[in-house]
Image 1 (cartoon, rainbow, N blue to C red):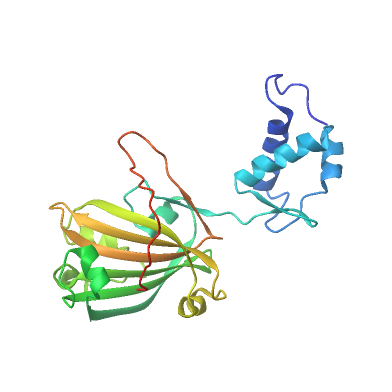
Image 2 (image 1 turned 45 degrees about the vertical axis):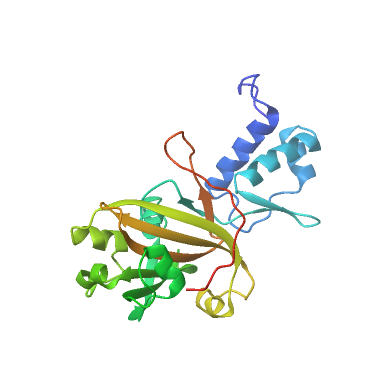
Length: 258
């Protein structure tokens, strides 16, 4: 039953949602576990089914549960938050939130800039560059594939950096380079066969495609990143303010794989 000391102005469904959220976060209901049936919960809380369903909707909107028709309501795995309003590397962002993240360096090679990447970096197609390919695992589970391109002049001092433990932003800072700003585009996509093998998911699984161009203090493009992010692991958030984040809505165009 609901307590009588909650305060008369708090809607019953909000009280129930808060109580269930606390139980989920305390581990009473674990990831993947089904919550008790709706009739059982409505009886336990002393409310109608409609009120109970409002509470479950709140939990679903917070990403704490999923509701499956004919099966029930299940606790979701906790998601890492990718805050697009900050100027941090993706790995630093996730570590700051307390997520255990490790990096596998898949390759580091000298390449000629493909035309579509050269456009992002304001360079000539075919200009010498370094391509760094990494796999990010969150809690030991493959979650993000990332390809980074650096013009050779920028990448030179980074030849011996261990990118399994040092972020590109951190490595650039150690060379004295000042990262001033970045622009980022986030589009929906589906997993390719090649990346499916790396991320251990079937081809066609929904993903986020993040393209980020990072600029130095002289407003020179120094880094281009393409991250393929499994949607089931990452939730994208931003705080909007008059002078903090600019969001441009446009139709997604065709993209070339990194």
